[in-house]
Every structure is written in structure tokens, then in C-alpha cells.
Amino acid sequence: MDAGEKLGKIVIPGTVIAMRGGLGAGKTTFAKGFAKGLVIDEYITSPSYTLIREYQGRLPFYHMDAYRLAGEEDFRSIGAEEFMYARGVCLIEWSERVESALPPGCARVTIQALDNGERKITIEDPLLETIGT
Image 1 (cartoon, rainbow, N blue to C red):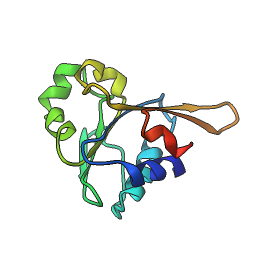
Image 2: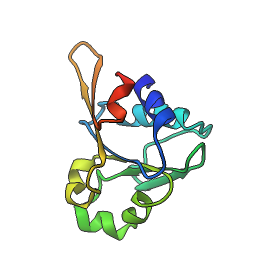
Image 3: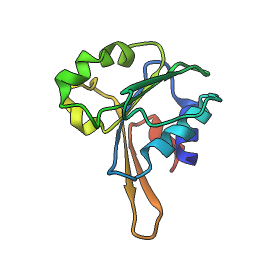
Image 4: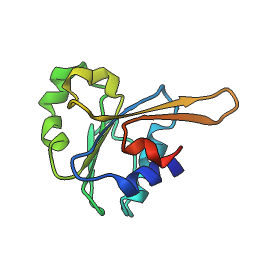
């Protein structure tokens, strides 16, 4: 959760974060920390069934989940592009399912659950890599 919070504190409007990681890797936990960094007091839950959740904080936060989508067409049909190009920040869980619909240059966060119970978090974005996970 610490890495998510650090990231939430430094993101700027228009940031899109494509999250990857298997079931139980910690994507939603990361999103909870991210929301904390955006000064959002609401309880953060997985958007698996609602597909998109919107929160207000330092910046609007659009939390999406592509797990139940059939692909890029479904992603576009739920209006995802409107959120990705809005003035807030967008975090997309299971982004690998909608890869071609993601904006060029979006940040990528991969969470891997390790055998010892810890998580390995990899951030691919020159600005965001500086948070030092």
C-alpha cells in the first residue's frame, strides 16, 4: 500500500496507470494506497462488477477493472476513453486484457506475489519510477 500512496501523491492530471498482476497479487490494495495518496477518504473497493468507480480527492480518481471484459471493444463501449483522457487520474486493473485501447506512454505497474508473501512492484514510467518501491 505504501508504493500506491507514494504514487498517488505525485501523479498529475491525465496520468493513466495500467496495472498488471494475477489474482490476489494486490492490485486493489495498491489502489487503496493510491487513493490515500490522492487524499480520498472513501472506502476503495474492487470495481470488478461495476467496471468503473469514480472518487473525488486531490484529483478525480477513475478506478477501472477490465477482468470481466471480453477485450478492447467492451472497454471502449463502457466509455473508458472518456475517463482516460479526462482531467483526473485513471488506474486500470487487468490492463493486459485491453492493451491496444490504452493511451500511448501510459505508466505500467506490475505486481507480483512472491513465495514468501511479499510483493514485487515494478513501475515502468520515467517520472513515476522515482518513488522507489
